[in-house]
Length: 473
Image 1 (cartoon, one colour):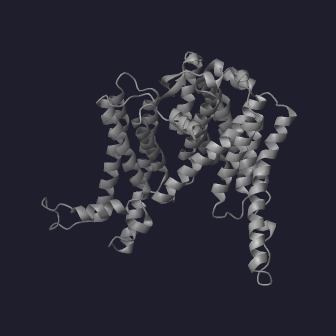
Image 2 (cartoon, rainbow, N blue to C red):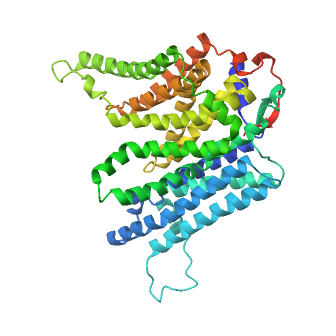
């Protein structure tokens, strides 16, 4: 228990208020991808149906611009987190706090205007001030996007105030090994660009593809719909990943590029076999457990009353298009296990290094996870599950990469795991929890019985490490 407590302490920032800042950035990250105006809560307002529909349509168009404004705020916030400059408090205030406050104020003012509707001349008086109850009702009618925006604003603002009072600090710092404090300085500086692109500015990676995609769709969708459909299914994912990889090569520098290219070697046959067996075994284990439970329940209570459960009710064969999931798996492995994992393991040790990389990997999904229609509570649950599964599965993928000194076993396992998720037909209550538990158990077994030789990746003995506070990102 003492080892677990010590590990938890060493992965937390030296300044606890930095956790508040990071939580605020996470809230601002998910905010643009949620509903700005809830149709269900809008229906609770005492307005005619036609008026509610008009408000919803106008606000939906208005929220598009607000969404991109919030994305800019998040990008600037992570930039300030990585490169705080000489006056970190001013940078956080000007780049994140004030823009967020402006966006949220405009959102609330626009909605209040839409909800109030046209007024008569008799009602247009300066003495007419909205009551607190009326204003609270308008805020309640707004969706989770506004709520998380407010939460993120408050958390970042609190941190910025403490930063200005010199009661907090940037950049983020954790306990780090002194013996390797000067290693890979130039390569690390350029690797931080990858962290920012993957976590704070993923839209910059997708923007060139989006522009190219608009041109292609405009030319092919009407003239040759068959070719357009093939492009959309196969070429678009490959093209997007190719453009992203090319951009990354431009920013990571020669040392990082050479390191990643060296990890593109074909692995030993054992690595390929494990890359195939691990995701297939995980999916089979979870499927067999659920099928066996339902079969036993049927035999105990429903024999002669209902048909027995069938395998087809739980699993379906993947379609050929599922192969495109390997493109996204390759891009993520290229970034997190190819570029970042080497740096983090060298700077913070094996366990903490992999933990930090997996944490970044999980957080990078906040920008793209399908949480648009989630409620406030469901968003929290989805974020925790995303971090938990990426932490658990990431140790398995990290082990594959380090053990075989190649990205391909992890790419293969990652792609097949994604395919297994898309082929689920029946999702039971504890499906997510079971996957986290199985992946965590597998990661523990791999590192416990087939440990990584730290000498092969340039680390000192973890038992003799000396620690000091150093920037973590």
